[in-house]
Amino acid sequence: MKRSKTESITNLLNEFLREQGLETPLNQHRLIESWPVVMGETINRQTGNLFIKNQTLYVKIKSAALKSDLMMTRTSLVKRLNDAVGAFVISDINFT
Image 1 (tube, rainbow, N blue to C red):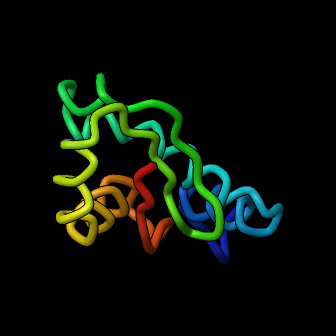
Image 2 (tube, one colour):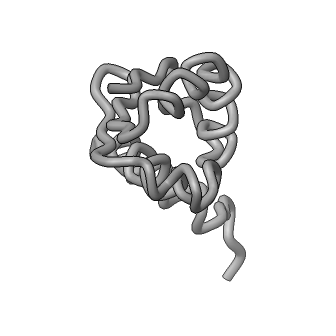
């Protein structure tokens, strides 16, 4: 039997997730899970709660000095985190 149209399982899974409205929550979860890898263990130890709302990542930082340093590199951090996920998930980071 000859197949007329074959697709990879990756394409089918991505299409299913998009149709079910699960692609964005999955990518948000992946981005939050990638925070320790992208930022490193030292910064991760100074990090509290993380959550995403309206394409903004909110990060609780325990050190005021670190918060100030991270604010200056916010644009590059957004790019690095989105690249780690492989999708546009956040457009900004808010350090609290």
